[in-house]
Length: 449
Ligand SMILES: *Cc1c(COP(=O)(O)O)cnc(C)c1O
Image (cartoon, rainbow, N blue to C red; front, side, top):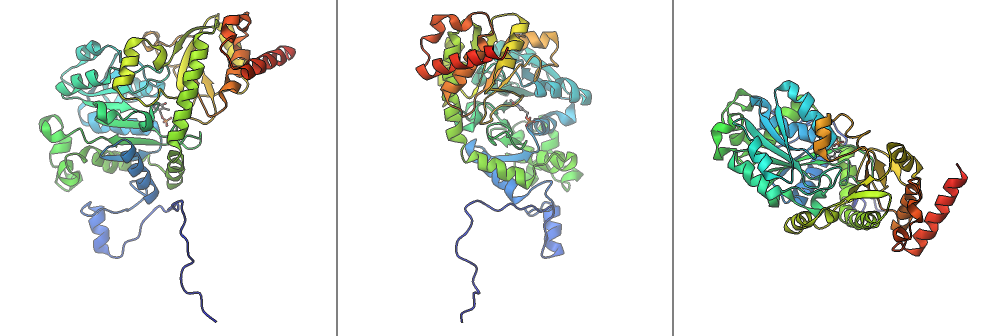
């Protein structure tokens, strides 16, 4: 009888989940070296874990960047970035007026209470960014495809202005994803993600990523960034630049000071799930971009729709920015402004069946949101005007459903706006199946009322 002493053949294709809070060392000397940051290694999962490291490496590679830090949410990634760049000096931020609502709250309320100041500028008007710069400006913040109106910024021109004035450019690349656009190749120094959205892709875990493209080097202007370039007891009487290197000093501080002290870390299970999501990122966003462009084109001709907000329906300059930026798709998010009075907007939203009303993007399911009531409900009247959002604006985030089914759902809901779907012009270009389903759904909708 032979004894089965060897490990069974075959290794898992999917990496195991390392669900361990702490990491053991062979000797006290090893432990001491890692805790003092003289040797690399894991100590405790708040600052690192093998699954989290794998995710950070994958996103670094996708963004063609230098390094990354994973966080508990997109909000945490933005917070760490802003603290590491402005925390010690009451820094000033110039931020796009077309931003995710949570970022606006963070800039104007929570971080404002700690001394940060912010000026908003139109992402399509570089002169407003130039005019907003002060001696305290450390950061320019913008989105590569803005949420919710899906407009593209004058990124390269705005990044030049930032760099001439010694500011770091942070780009929120959540809506575009690195599959469609890599901001580091167009002037961004840092990239942030809500991994909750397209990277995860299935509407499950929350997560965030802070990515350093390697473009920012604090030693080029050491007096401007003393907390990165001069020694401090926190870093064993060395500087972060000495400990981590010039191109990794900022993220070293983000991880080993802010992530460690404040604690918004990512769990191993979340990192594992987001990595699984990333393995299908390309096929998802290509399909979602194609469906969104098709729905935008259809709705652009619909009589119930006053305006479509999508990079391909934003005029010649948006088209130019799309080409120059090398965008490989316009993403799955677009918005419309409805014709009709507020009650009709309410009716349209409540009539959607397949498309669910929820404040998320990047899911495999198509979702609608009313930004004025939901994600952007705390904007001041002035911010609201600058954002371009109105009470008639609906944001869609396109999933993986059949485009004909989505079109049918939209048409039956839009029929609430008087006679809209009776117009032959709105129907002509629809595929026959969608037309039939739209009629059926519209009829059954009326039957129920
Ligand atoms: C959702 C979102 C965020 C915030 O991310 P969370 O994971 O929800 O904390 C930031 N920016 C954009 C563009 C987003 O869509």
